[in-house]
Image (cartoon, rainbow over all chains, first blue to last red; front, side, top):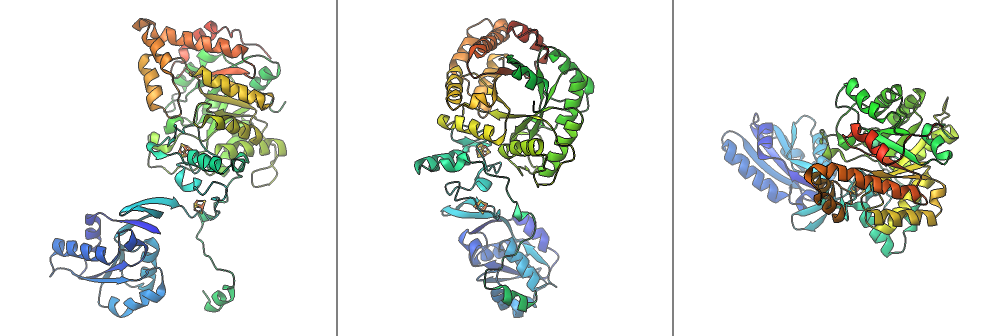
Length: 224
Length: 307
Ligand code: SF4
Ligand code: SF4
């Protein structure tokens, strides 16, 4: 899932301070699971904003859609958005942008910092796992991502700073390449990292789109 | 000859190589750089010129390498993967070669968080293994990484670093093998303090036939003080400093500690001279360049052979 963290309150407060009616829009998917931008967090944020501004100065509305990264769900806001002069989005960066695209005449402000694609380690505790590099090498590296979990994104690690089992940047951060070695050794597959991994194709350096096989015609017909 | 560098000639002639290291200044203080280099002149076969070492901004390694050459010492142009993408790397390699630089050392580079610009974006477009392969491709095939022909390929002697001390130990020699396969001509190791480890590692490299393909130069760093030894043991990632070294330094009179450090270094060098599979040593006298003449003298590596 996408993991996000709520922005510091003062930053949010400053963004909306000049408006009269503001709608806070949550998202019911990733950011709800990681406790950053679901309906509960919308409520909490609005309560804090009401306290800070006083009800008569700015009126805050609340709405949470299933997914802000899907126009179908954003359509539910069409009637409502008109009543407001600004929107706060608590979705990830993708959802915030889609909301802004749906309502191009309204200022849209982010209430979260989108952090990463990650996993749930425990309630309220998440870890980054993927940088969406576009050329997944997990099959070679024992299912441990060298792009994300190695501080230097090395494809032929470890580096000279590998420190017992830790990464050179921090004793508490495991060295990804130590773990890759350990996992592959356990599976008797070390041969895979004896081969040199060639320079990576950083396909994530330009805006990307994906059209799944079979949908090309449909996309063409949409004319976008 | 791949490059015709002094180091390559020394190794080819079968001499025990002795290389040094100079960190460029934190500014454009050319005089300070010239002075550091002057201590190495005639005492080493080649001097590594570090590249934004510990992620601190310094005079660029290729520029400092040129100044080093002007002072009569052959440079080893270091390049880290942290600060440049493949375009900038290839451009700097061509530029360095055009100015007469004939050796280069391919490194990952310390993480940017250690330096004076911890907020910077680490590039790591290539890793050190891929950098070695790219330089080899440029030299041997006359092609850029992207595949186009190079008009005047750079004939460089390609260096790599090795850390024989990291865990898991049995993997270390395979790392070396990988660097040799990528195209390394010589390898300089992390500072050696644990002799037992390096003996075992070199023996493995001999067994795998790697030492026939690559010149191994163990890194030597004389300890200046007990504090330095403790700092290296506890604070520098990837460093393996056995307690015996610290105890030995603690065991001598305070004013003789630095001398004892040099003694330990010289003993190591003596052992390496006799060790099968070792082609020389690399002296990293960090901020102690003025001591290099004395260390070289005491290590019995002078005069340096003319080749
Ligand atoms: S290799 Fe790339 S796609 Fe695969 S997990 Fe890592 S960042 Fe994600
Ligand atoms: S210590 Fe390991 S995880 Fe950290 S940068 Fe080096 S190879 Fe990557």
